[in-house]
Image 1 (cartoon, one colour):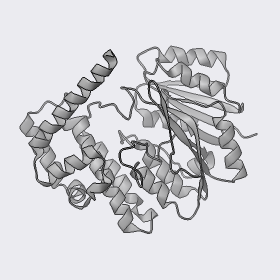
Image 2 (cartoon, rainbow, N blue to C red):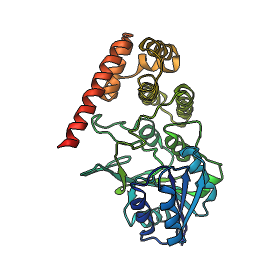
Image 3 (cartoon, rainbow, N blue to C red):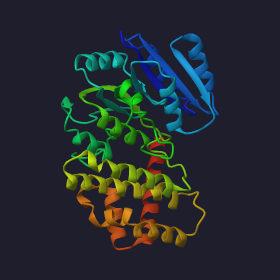
Image 4 (cartoon, helix red, strand yellow):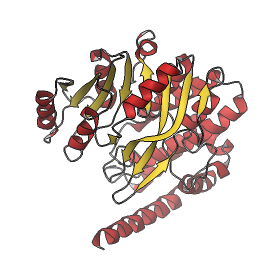
Length: 357
């Protein structure tokens, strides 16, 4: 009976952490270890983790100074003793049979990685979404769809439906040997999409990957979700440029270079919007409106971003990114800043109105 290591990085998750851990200790597959890495939480998350460790000997808690989710996951990998590894975020939860399903499929299929689908969990409803496709699939020699769906989460689908990247670490069971034999780890320099880079590298190393469109993972959407949060990142250039260079290195993984660049350009535009949201348009940015404009203009003059602004197929972009590109192609940076701020105020007002009803 194979052992599965479930790695859970935790940072200030007290509101949802109990549901997350309970969904793991109640798994129908018993031979698991739940490795919780408490990444310097300042709320009651540490006490909750300790309580579960005392209640169930399969729970192992490691407390570290706040170092970021990549370091927390890397420590989880190093502490793991399982034959297989999966990851769960501390504000999410999973179906009771998720691990049993994954172990059955990965052993029967003789795969290095098995993947499954998820449910997008809003406050009052859940939306079933495929991680890769609406049908079960197998990948061995040609994994290009996995790369494209990881780099551009909405590749080949309706742009109005916000889905997660196929490269997210959850919804996957990895054979530990492909991680350990190649010393595969998360890059601590990256502040976003660390999981996507990790997964694409794992995809490339795997001989066989199987995917099942079975919704077993509940991805919780909250105002403080990592994906929707807008924390201030002062040096966004260092981390986001490093991310783009990582993605660009995957070009050699596919045969159709033209299609890769089409997908890559979409990702560059998304990263450019991250620069605005996490830095230049953020409320904690200290510079004037003109310093914001000059910093963005400098970005657009960098071929890393400027080439994609010029070459991206606008129809492949979601509405916000599409609008940004149209403004930036005409160098209307300040005008886009005004439009962006008005849109943000309207969105904030609507959210407030909904909470009051």
